[in-house]
Image (cartoon, rainbow, N blue to C red; front, side):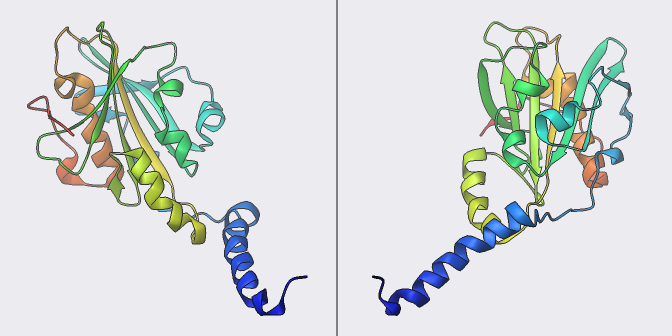
Length: 219
């Protein structure tokens, strides 16, 4: 039989477990930030765009997202595919997003993180193949900051999410299927569109026009 002297401690423990259960399972509390992918224009730098053939339910099916787009940006002989997805399902975005975004279009077997010159706060996840071919670049933005290490991010936010509603994460993913052999990832046309897209989304005029001048530095 349980002693009554343990009752207060047990009640506190049960309450601590009950709070996150109510917040996430029953109430489904979320904390919108007022941003939307619609702020990213269909024309970026000298590139104009058109939607790809993704079905209308693609974002919902893969990322539990109601706010997303995928466009093909073209300028002269350059073609870049930009996919932007917002979701409260954080793991769906940071855990190998290329499996959904680039599946059947590109194969990657090398994963690194680089930082653009002048933007040490914005780590870029670089996806390449040792045999050459397509290059994918993506950036993750959450609660006013960019994510370099998803594992550390998960550990950092685990405690916060016990007692607060979920906040949205944004994935910016660019893909270039025709990259010259030996090209540094942060010098290709896809990289040239990445920061302008992020800048337009965040409303950062200073970041709305950026052309990589070098290969970046490994993080």
